[in-house]
Image (tube, rainbow, N blue to C red; front, side, top):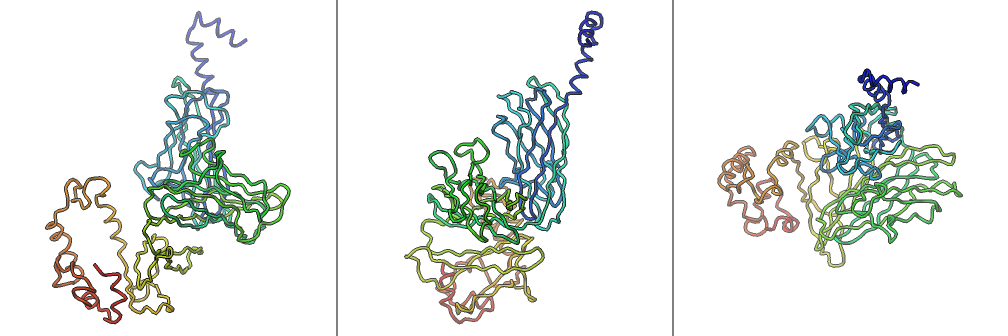
Amino acid sequence: MRLGLVVRLTSLVPWVLVAFCVCARAVAAVSIDIGTETAAPGSSVAIGVRVRTMDADVAAVQNRIDFAPPLRVAALPNGEPDCTVSPAIGKNATGFRFLPLRCAGAACTGVRAVVLSFENVDPLPDNSVLYTCRVAVAANAAEGDYSLRNSDLGASDARGGFVTAQGNDGAVRVRRSSLAIDIDDAETAPGEDVVIGVRLRQMGAAAVGAQNRIDFAAPLRIAARVDGAPDCTVNAAIDKRATTFRFLPIGCVGSGCTGTRAVVLAFDNLAVIPDAAVLYTCHVEVEADAAPGSYVLRNAEANGSDAAGAFLPASAGDGTVTIFQDDALVAIDIGSVRAISGQRASVDVRLRSLGPDAPAVAGTQNEIVFDPATPIAATEDGRPACAVNPDLGRTSILWGRRRASCRPGVRALPSRMKGPWVFPSRSGETPMDAQNFYNRVFLPALAEAGIEGVTWHTLRHTEAAEHPGSIRRSLGVPLRSPESLSGLLRA
């Protein structure tokens, strides 16, 4: 009756119909909602953002997620938010950006998401997942519920018309973990695949099932079987025959896949998984042109359940795949260790031979670069709190510390990847001038270090060949055991 009344009135008062339409659009608001998940301190969890269309034809949406410690949306290696649009909605022009603009690290307090496509203006399905973001929880986070604020909501239809949007905040429920799910470390060469294991540690829990997500990036990827499923296998010894594996994002193919989700369970076996048991293994492929180095397999969305179906939050330990150059004969590895915030932990550095052709090694050297949150401790005289293994019988050991202020300065220098010069000038547009470097860098460095009588030519001499003992004398090191240093310092 009311619609008929409006239609009859339009011939007399045209603006009545217009007013009616505007009011109707304002009432029919869509809802953009941030999800709520549970995670343990020191872990990360994927938070989904959904849209409820309320029967409206919505082709594009946007919103902003604001966060605060102990939560933050994780960042990808390129510094962008670790958020992924759902491939099922076909909005391939979707973008994410940290806020405030041009922020970095802890200075970022929000993420803006714009979900759209220039080729696909089909309406979004009701209750569909728009995108997910990986949210990291600080290791020292106290138990509690922490909000993810939802704001700057907007939506439009296929014609670009405004659609009123509302939304609900999300949250991460932080609960102390009672179990741990860790990805093993592995090593291989370029072009070779390697099998990595995923283990469960019961820390007072009685988990009968578990799940986690492994995120990977080039040059690594979890291999696929002939049927397109991840090449992962549940450990037969734990007898969880309903275990499943799926590539992520859902519906991805080939290089479009960036993760794998594993759900380890059985419907007819509620036996507790043994402590430290391998849950499953996956084949990881390495690109043939992969550069030597260490590459991380990110562990997220780790949790478990007991026989009653109760949720068990889990800590998630990342794995590292170390890629060696083809002609490498030995490896020097830094170990990993779990520690409680505020306490010290000891980390080993080990030497390994790579194959039967590896020579007998008389001495080694390496550098450890650490994060400010996990510094290597210092002794009373300022030296690194490191100790050589006495069983090695090596007494001529040199320890040194680099100033933390050096690293930002080095990183600020022009990168050789941005220009043709290996040693660029300050502008990066011309090669470095040797005389300028000598006057502006080399001589001031000698003066600051209090070193006299050293020229650029001095650096050409070697410890073991032309002037035996010269370097050790200048450093005040005893002259015994010259052979222990010759392998390191020979030019």
